[in-house]
Image (cartoon, rainbow, N blue to C red):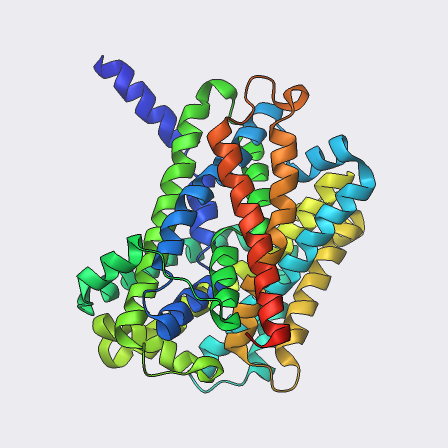
Length: 412
């Protein structure tokens, strides 16, 4: 019995990784900023959203991992094989828009973090873009990625800050389990952004590709499933406490679009004191720089995988021109958006997450169609609970988007 338990534990350690890494990477610059603004503007009113979407996030991520294990193919490739080139272009076009917006958010995070040290974005953003491009093209990115992933321990400071801020816990618990919703365009837009930064379109493609690359087989899938579930819970614990920390320290001190990075940084004051801005800047810079490399790279990988183009990193530019072209274009686009005259860096990051939330239903519908096809998944199709939950998420996001547009147009 002891040998059997040890064998299972070792197998779990061998399989674990894609789910936790993908979920952790979701707490990027846009995520940190969106959760902070949610707490700063609406205190704890969006905590119940985090609890609900934790379950849906786990389901969606498990679906991706299951498709990867059963088919040994990436999501983009499955869409092309089963829906044809036109629908693939539509799905990947949706992904491209969401990824470009999020890449711009990462460069906004780089600019915002270094502006706290008095450095101009017109210097830092071009340098960051060049450094990221060289890291990936020269093939040294893997080493740097491990360093940045190790630095994600900084996210744990939000948990400590949320506790040390001494929030009124009965109020926190009430807001967590008793939904509070208003139909103002600002609230609806931020709710969409919270969902969009927690369940992003790119995560689905990235996770499935990672599982396939790891070579996880069906017989070991139960361990991969736990990897996905643990990752989903851990990332949303951090998200929960970012909102609590901001709600307990910043709420009531800011108003709408006037919020700044300096004010958001004060959410870490309970744990860092006068060094709150420094700690926030380091965490934001770390998350931004890593994601600003990963997102353009994942975009290039997804397109190249779906259409059978040569994939770069291990190849020279001339050997994989389309791959490197997509990667380069994504970086240039993200940097240019941030360097446009008078862009609000915080608003860029929030807008990008809302765009992801608005476009997410497109990807979810493709996933639901694929995973319920027996010719693709055999006996591993979805059960009714998964279908109801994920379809509900897609429909709710569409309805929230329409509600936001109506409120924006008619001034509700």
